[in-house]
Each structure stands twice: as structure tokens, then as C-alpha cells.
Image: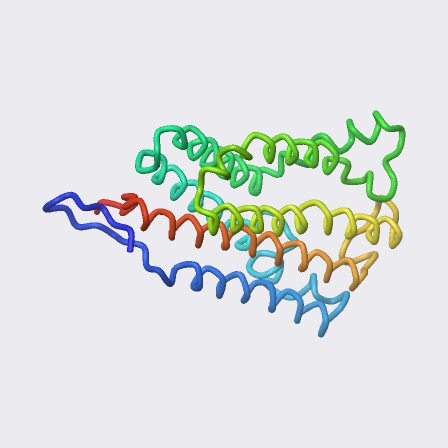
Length: 241
């Protein structure tokens, strides 16, 4: 258990079971979304409260907030490890924390969608997977980030290095690979005019659930790994109350 060891101050500590609790919440969102589409099909979007409370593929709702909260929590843990690890690793831990923080902000603000039109026009094609052309600069950025952290990973315990690579792979598969697949289905279904009410595709909606499944898995695995590393280096991330 990670806790603030300061004397005389009550703290809120983080249980070892926290990742399982987070996984349970994610599973509820995913199962309810998939079940709604399988049962109600095109009528899903008209279900009261579905978009706001359940739909993992919608923006600005409860699942969006949860996804951002996961990333920000992971950022907090990574930052707390920084002063406890070896000096040569501290800057990398801080960079990981900032990266996770920015990813959480983007989850809410959807900044990543901005380059799509520019990149599409640059390549002279905005159809098919190019409807979400942001995946091209995103893929390049992922490669740059991976290269940047190679030396850092070689200095970490083997279980942590392999785990973080696996977690990143899960997230990238959902956020980029399945995003391209869903965009292709979206375009084949209704061109640039797809929406869940007028042009409904069960395949598209289930792929979208798959995207979130892999993204949730990647972030929650990251949290689990960081909490374990935090315990090893006695990181203090308790919140003083």
C-alpha cells in the first residue's frame, strides 16, 4: 500500500485492489455498451441516458471522464515515483507523467482530431481511413516516444519494462489500429455522413467498443505496474486530508 509516511497527518491510501476496481468499472461500461447495441441496434442512441452515462464511443460523457481520470491517476503515480527512483531515471518518470497528463486532457478535449483534415488534404485523400488521418502523425509520435524511452526501459526491472511495453502496445492497438478499422467501416457504411441514427452499423459500433477495451486495458495495466513499482521504491502518493 502506498501512503504518506508523515507523522500526525491522516492520509487516503491506495489499495492493491485499486486496479481491479478500475477494471470492474471499465467492464461495466463496455458490457453495457456492447449489450445495448446487440439488443437494440439502431434504436440504441434513443435510449434514455445511454449516450451520457454508458456509451464508450461518445464524447463528453461519463466514460470519457473515467478514461481521462485513469490517465491522470497514472500520471500522478508516475510523478510520485520520480523522486524515489535513481537520479538517471527521474526525468523519464516526469516525462511519462506529463505524457499521461496530456493524454488525459486530450481524452476530454479531443485535440487529436484537429490534424485530420489538414493531413487528409496534404495527401489529397479524405476518404476511408483518411477520415481520421490524425493516426498518421500519432503513429510517428508513438515511434519517437518509444525511441526516447528505450534507455529508460533498459534500466528498469525486467517485469516493469515488459509490462510497460505490453501496456503501450494494447493502448496503441486500440487507439490507432482499431480506430483505422472502425473508420474504414464507417466510410463504407455512409461515407462522410455516418451517424448512429441515420446510418447504423453494428460492426462499427462493436469495433468502437473494442477500441475502448484495449485502451482501458493498456491504461489500467500501466496503473497496476506503476503502483507495484511505487511500492518497491516507497513512493508517497497518499492524499493528505
